[in-house]
Image 1: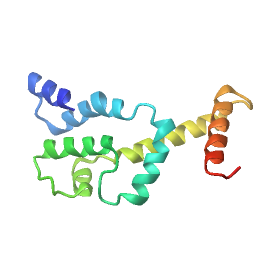
Image 2: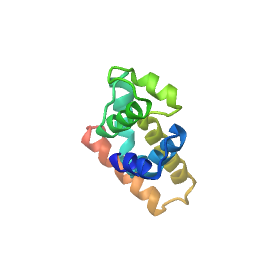
Image 3: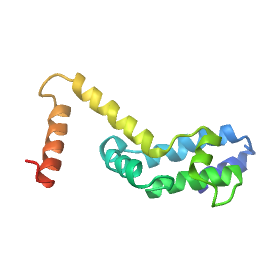
Image 4: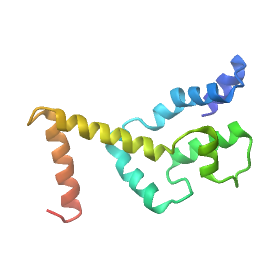
Length: 132
């Protein structure tokens, strides 16, 4: 995040839309790496347990950047930050990426490596919860 701020300052970028685009390119892509796999758990936790507050460290980082970009106080509601910038919470992006992976898996031929991996993952999770 600080790298993004520094880079914007170095090249004289002050426009908020451009800074948001750079944040998405430089920072968000790193924060969301692999979210197709692990994002569902954090998305579920954020959706049900953290109404109005940032759940994960990645979400806190996103909101901190938006506060800095807009120059608002820490007490500014997260929903206001997201609405003002037109951004979505990270957990929604993670859930969308997981849904895309799921849809891609369904389109694969039966028994493909991707389907086998997903089935094994689901079975492991179910066994941990005592559902199998």
